[in-house]
Structures are given as structure tokens and as C-alpha cells.
Image (tube, rainbow, N blue to C red; front, side, top):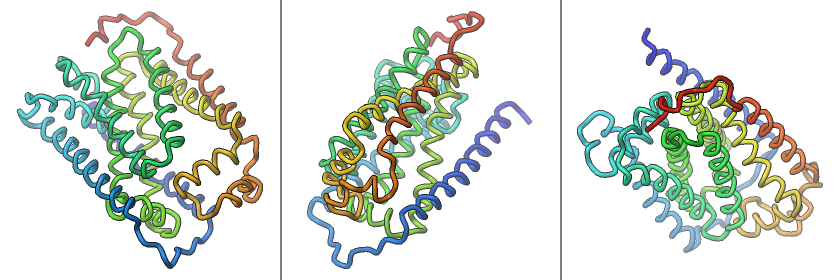
Length: 323
């Protein structure tokens, strides 16, 4: 068996393990939520219809980008403007060990598209998911990704950042497609109704979402390993994840969990309770008020461990990583 086949088999095994763990997370989530009866009078609002159409537009564009990437990986379409970027995101997301070679010799336009397309899709998906109302949730999500990206960029330093951008951005796009799919049917109202009242669909959705989310960081580390080595690449990703947990958790801890939950629910109607119940949610479901500070601690530990792992050992020639 060749090296490429071994890596492909390892990727499949990792994917299967992540799905199995994801189903465990879904079952635990369902047990924690308990049965939720769907409201009898749910009628999609005009805003939900509009969001559903926006989700369809984003979904078509995202799927088209992925298809272009797949075709470009096998045909001469890669010579077209932008096709090289689509190809790199596809290869980086599915075969991250080839992310570096897929970004070599790219035009400046393709490099910018490699960054702009996934970021734009992520922002667009989040604002549609929250019906352009929950700017606090969008800010937290985008802020966490910005912190993660900045930390990883520091460790990449003088080396090319495009391989890890291709890998992470490619998986982020696939994750957004998973989110947009249910949104495109009935908009955010139907999306949340499915999550809270349909156990089978909820389990499938959470399992796939969990597997893809974790794969984002595995793919990013795998892509970085060609430049930094396995140890340092793992450290860079861990430090980025730790910082991305630490900063939002610190903000939530300072503002208060009940305040953040009440604000989020007031904006999106995520949970089937009103403002008064939301303000006492942490006590009613035994969420420790110190939970954000636990997250701060976890984030700090991951950051420190990541920094220690990413610390350079023997000097690696920078010429190997030039792109």
C-alpha cells in the first residue's frame, strides 16, 4: 500500500471515529434536552421565507464552489481564474496532507479567493441562521475564528499560510453547507424546530456537525505538519483552539452566563422559553455560574500546552516551506 493510500485510509478511519463520537454527543444532547413538543401553531414568518431563499442562494454558490474544486482537481478547468482556489479548498479539506502542493504557484487572485470565499460563506451562513438579528452570536463566532487564525498565523510566521487556509477554509465551507441545507427548506424557524423536536434528524445533524467541526482542526494540523512537523503543527492548532476558547469565555464570564443566554434567546428564540425563564436558566438546569471560568481555565491550559509543543526544536530550513 502506497503512502497516499495509507493516509487516505487513516483519514477514513478518523472520519468514522468522529461520526461515532458525534452520535454519542447527539444522544447525550437529546437526553439533556428531553422531549420537546412542537408548537401547534408554528407558521413560517415572512422573515423566515426570506432567510430560506437567502440560504438557498448561499447553498447553491457553496455547492458550485465545491463542484468546481472537484472538477479542477481532475481536469484542465484549474487554469480558469478562481478554479485553482476552489481546487485547493477541495483538496485541503479532503486530503490535507496535499494542501501545500495544491497551493503552490497560485495567482494572487486565487490566494485571496482562498481566504475570502470561506470567510464570506461563514459570515453569510451565521447571519442567515440568526435571521440578521443575533449580532452578538455572530460576533462571538467570528471573533473566536479570528483569534484562532491569528494565533496559528503567528506560529506559521515566515512560512506560507495558504496550506492551512486551504485546509481549514475547505472544511469550514462543507460545514456551512451542512448548516445551510436545513435552513434552505423553511428558514431559521424550521431549522430550530427540527433541532429541538426531531430526535432522528437532530442526531444525524449533530453527529455530522461534530465530526466536521473536529475535522477542521485535524485537517489544519495535518496541512501544517508538512511545514512545521507533526509536533509543532499539533501545538499550533492546540494553541489556536485554546485561545479561541479562552477569549470568548472570558467575555462571557465577565458579562454573566444568564445575561448572554437571555440576550441570545431574545435575538433568535433558540430555546423554547421566554425571557423570565431564560434569566434563571443556569439555576434550573444546573449550569454552574462559574462555567465560563472553567472554559477560561481549559482554554488557558490548551494554549500553554500548545505553545510548549509548538516551540521550535531543531532548526528547520525555511526554504522547504517557501511558496
